[in-house]
Length: 104
Image 1 (cartoon, rainbow, N blue to C red):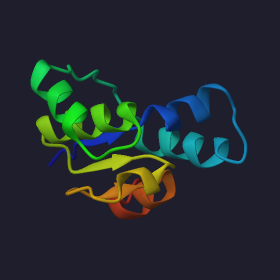
Image 2 (tube, rainbow, N blue to C red; image 1 turned 60 degrees about the vertical axis):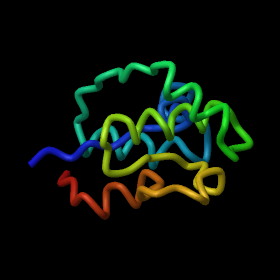
Image 3 (tube, helix red, strand yellow; image 1 turned 180 degrees about the horizontal axis):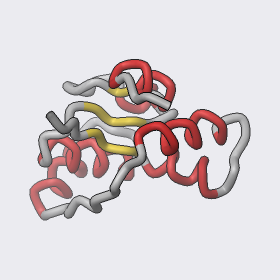
């Protein structure tokens, strides 16, 4: 069974920009999951939900409602505090590896 998770852009940027202290967990996540990335579309409904939401960060709102619209099982971010009211699990990279049991 495939699992659909949403990877927040901050985790991708941590990897690409080698931002410390976040680089190692992000790199570990990418190595272990060996993700084939699919870019999800954002439609007008997602934008409307994001605009009407209580999120303080519009980018986080767009990502969250995009994840919900595409039935993902979790959002992976290192910025968990911005997703306090989420209806799906919000995980950091290490928690994602632990939860989904990605092997080395």
